[in-house]
Image (cartoon, rainbow, N blue to C red; front, side, top):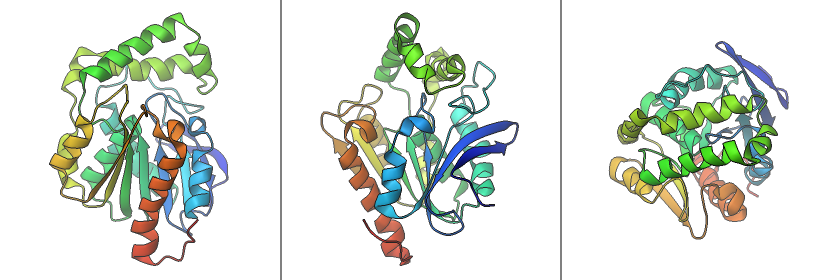
Length: 271
């Protein structure tokens, strides 16, 4: 299929909003971007456009069900919602867009989904995975910060701010927040998937991340047999693409060019 620059894809029972920037997946390698737990296609800002300009690759951005303008989900979310997203939704989405080869780039929850997919499927179309502030296990700091943001959502203008990005803002917020604050979620652990990843991984982690610590990076180093490039960013919190945009853009662009352009000789221009 030929993707419009923006629109909706029907995946299962849900309509998922998307943006397609640059060449079609059938024409060039594609970076598929998976947003954070309170993110959406629009909340990436101009980072996808700048990434496309830097790499020459196609960039596909979408909002998962429950986020942005996509179909809302039934609450409460199941505690294995990220695994379901990786194994049930993402394969269908990649097939629907005609994904031929490229990279998954995920932030926070999106990074966890990307890691699960890479480890569980062995998809030969994937050449690498970029994980920004990933979660592989639940840490105390994560739960404390997520409990704090619940209070802010219910007592400040945070709800109004998020409503600019989500058509069903309560669905987006409580679907994510409720799962992470469920006591049973403390046992959530996807680190086993990492041992089965057979493609290069790049991890970008802010040293001042309020939702996770360097322990997440250490787990990847312990579990992975594949190459793992780590970039620790001083004085940076949970969103390196917003807080350290130039470094994040340069790091991601160099990684994808190295594994796709130089390795495959695809002829895509460098910035």
